[in-house]
Length: 213
Image 1 (cartoon, rainbow, N blue to C red):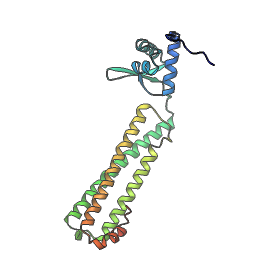
Image 2 (image 1 turned 90 degrees about the horizontal axis):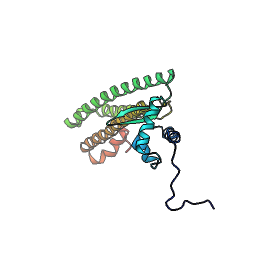
Image 3 (image 1 turned 180 degrees about the vertical axis):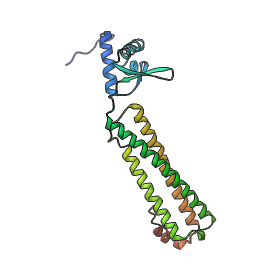
Image 4 (image 1 turned 90 degrees about the vertical axis):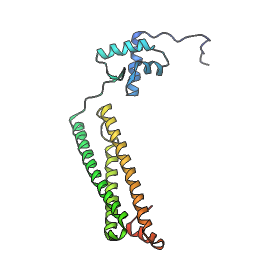
């Protein structure tokens, strides 16, 4: 049986070199920014807050880790590999595609707004053939936008830096909200149509529009 610690027995105190090695190993494994307070707490106080702050500052000055201000404290993380040329080109392409998708989505939202206005003014003002074409086109464009955004944020491309990964994640969350909003608009459009359609023709109208919900 392995020996157990006696009551009151403490772990051996780490030397500054051992503490620095422990902190560096922790930062490498976590691969995200931490403050001295967080590191000391996460390491179960094996390295005190004061010692962690001094060791992190020293390692930063020796260019062993990166450090940056975050509010009233400084956070540290391991040095990221420099992006290669192909990764930079991929990032530029992603930003260009995101801009294009944003512009396309704005145009689609305007088109949806006009369609909703036409529906409210009276179904007779919107020919069924045109309405069916518009709904099908909007659904197709929504599917394409969603597929492209998923590809951009799938993680298959080499990460550039923590900041850039956060930026991509933020864009993903933003366009996910747009997608959800478009779904809500689609449901509202159908309610408008349903209210202007005879009850015995509702299912037929839904089938004509190609709606599956």
